[in-house]
View 1 (tube, rainbow, N blue to C red):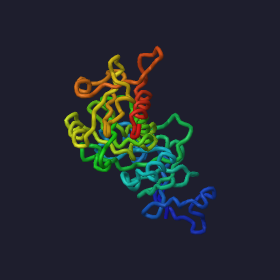
View 2 (view 1 turned 90 degrees about the horizontal axis):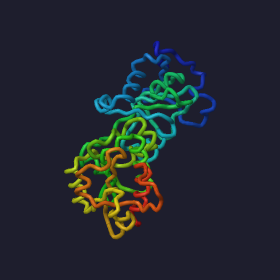
View 3 (view 1 turned 180 degrees about the horizontal axis):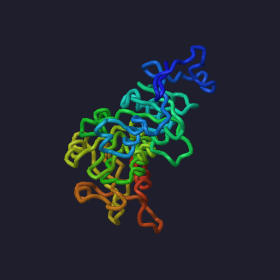
View 4 (view 1 turned 135 degrees about the horizontal axis):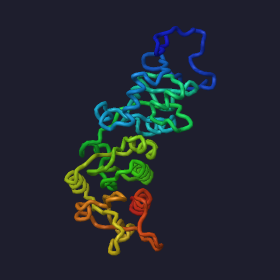
Length: 299
């Protein structure tokens, strides 16, 4: 039997269970052994997905997030983040799409393009081939960093409000071998759909925690980390010089609009990027990427 949004209907046992262009790929069957089909954007599951995309409070209430695109889903579930999210609760697939590599799902739904775009909250893109509801990894408090082990490189984001910048910084930190990311008060949701796309699944593979400044102090003291903040002032130490001889360090980045908080300026050593040109500042994602490289392990 296959479930349709108007009820169950019987599949011809002689009919292939997948399209010919999926031959050789894993069959798109759910844990229950059948696929569903939804054709209306008024369906309750589609509305549930759309609300998860746009409403942070609802995401936290449900403990779920929506991830769109087979490429990102493969990176999340098959590239080191699978242990954190487990099996997808629901997986929407386009009619011609196969289950993304590494993805398993409790429930699989085939749907036309307009329904999948509605579920993904991506009405203006050319195509979405897959979108899934995944469990939200815990990010509250110091305990969320347990998977990082002993930390020697910690990135702390101080009131970063742009989700694209947040996602880019997490992705860069992961690529350069940093151990964890601390989300300080005022920082946006790392599971915002824009942050998820910018991070390319990095938010699932990088240990992250929402911390108060007191909790950040606890972590840096426990792991022996010097705290630096990015502050392009004349008397700030060059980042590569500051990192020399530091076995462990924490880099605090502030938002472009508000800059660093008063507590960051009081409790962290300022570092800067040497800039011989005439530009006063850089976008925080660009500046952060340069600092993450200059202050990486082994630098």
